[in-house]
View 1 (cartoon, rainbow, N blue to C red):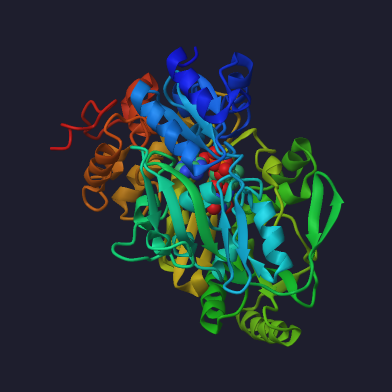
View 2 (view 1 turned 120 degrees about the vertical axis):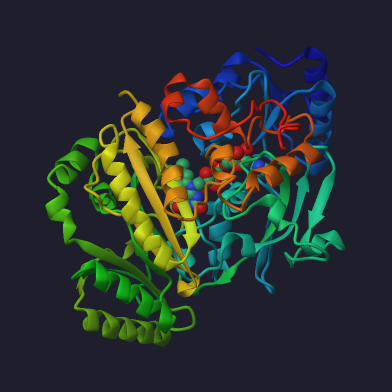
Length: 539
Ligand SMILES: Cc1cc2nc3c(=O)[nH]c(=O)nc-3n(C[C@H](O)[C@H](O)[C@H](O)COP(=O)(O)OP(=O)(O)OC[C@H]3O[C@@H](n4cnc5c(N)ncnc54)[C@H](O)[C@@H]3O)c2cc1C
């Protein structure tokens, strides 16, 4: 069903008839799935809706006008980058307007001060290519380079390269955002001039309005322009190789090199991580889930299962791999120095280097997202936490224990404690736990597991990144902060009193639990009847 005609006509007068549509076939094309992130889960089945119309603005002024029309006609709307976040980036209410930002392709690079200014239509491959031509680089999310830089930086923004490169919220510089009331807010140095070089700006640092460790998933306005920091890289070209889908970047081995180490024990793995951080070497230091090796080797689903199906708890128990990226940022000699230090550390802990391909398929500029779902059809990352290394390591072990109770329907990973790595040369640690399932099976166990992970975090005093939009807010809010939820909802009420900007985020997971009968047995926390407006429930 489309949005009301009067609203549609007014919106059309803003962008022209070519850039708006309520054609059911076009709208169907914006359906979440099939396949991919969170595919087939209860959340997708219950919450994701086909939009009533889609609009493609080109300028910030057009975005402001669109938002004001939405307020006048009470049309719910959703800012949309590339839609990679599955149901989370699609409407949750009927007759919503998707504001697809792909025509907003503003792009500048300041070579002298190493920053870029991008519109939300710019994707990482474009930015990374331009950055690398100038001896700079940025972090690209693990899902690949095909996503909006802005959407990633306000929502996520990390990878193994975060070992060296600062956290995403530190790399966001001058930014502009259209608030849910249609007003334009400029942050950082843009608050008092046209030069976006600085993120802090005068007065309070408003970057906290965009994100915490993770982001608000589009429920508090639309970012229309952002400056971000570029990081000095090395000058040699990385050459594209292979034939799709088996592609990669050939690395200039004297300046960039991946090395995989077989570690004798988990203790050795952890000790080496700390020592590498202390020595301040390397461009990435990460332990990744073991089944990624099977994904990397397999060319199809059958081959994946032939490889991974041979493993069991005993075979993987003593298998510890540490993956290191060396970068000669300043010279070949500097990289040689890093490698010598690394060899000393690895010799001391008894690690062995394994042959490693001199290419990069994932982390620097490629899009390997298709392979992410290869083994089962569906995937989600449960938690992605930036805390300390001391936090990251036991966090994965607790996850492995809980996950075991829900396998199947989860894909077996034989208690592998997931992905953990250092951030910012060990000043921070990261843990992420990926789960896979077959969307054609009963997914109740996956829906339960997802929420139970939050309860596990609260019980065991782990931090979580999924405060707010990606877990029930009334479950996590009282435990963290405390009363994080009250603050978040008060801000939402203030700026979006009609709850039109991606409703009911940040209460979407609460709403899902209310609506899905099968979630009732595990709902053991208090929440008021919350949607559509939270006001009056914040006592
Ligand atoms: C398989 C997979 C692996 C991933 N691995 C990583 C990883 O390792 N590291 C990492 O950092 N990320 C990772 N991600 C997250 C991914 O990079 C983000 O989903 C991506 O940044 C979203 O980009 P998008 O352009 O598709 O945004 P969308 O999916 O379209 O939008 C994401 C959210 O942001 C909102 N939004 C979009 N644009 C704007 C805007 N301009 N203003 C306000 N709100 C907006 C949307 O409403 C939505 O809620 C992964 C995701 C997947 C699916």
